[in-house]
Length: 256
Figure (cartoon, rainbow, N blue to C red):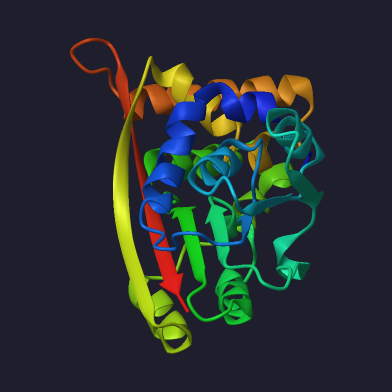
């Protein structure tokens, strides 16, 4: 995929940050010395960590140059590095690894969750949140349009960039032997958005990227138009004209 677009992502900053707040509220560590925000994006989640633990050394990690640019502008006193979590190891002494909406993009991510949890000291916490929305209309319709002509040849592999997440029991069985405490839960958000095109704008910053990045501009416009028409049918307006974007997410807090 092309690089992430921080400006597009931040169009719904409050809604995107809400799961990070909910995840952080369940992290038990009181005064960790070193904290890492994996998949820090434009720094909105990192800012929460800095506010909670102002005395900690907080490091942000991401693969996107544009996201890191935005994060450095937002938090110039803190360090951000470009790295792929699949090949990254936490610095010695890291006590909290926080990962908001990143591991759904990482192939074989459960292996990496186990690796990172194993790298923490006793009492360290791995806190993870991932969208669990591939079976929602917003994502089903991405795939449906992609398999239509004239998009099929270019987009046939786009749906393979994200796999469905394992069931909670799988995470439990794999992670529980490595930790002293393990919490797993789902939350379903219903985000209030202006209309169906607003849903499209939301997913342009994340899930829609693999489907539109490979297309030239005329094809992209045609794809988005076809997708928007389906979204409008699937998300009818409420009594006040707004629409509700149903958004399930899974949360994991593992204390070693």
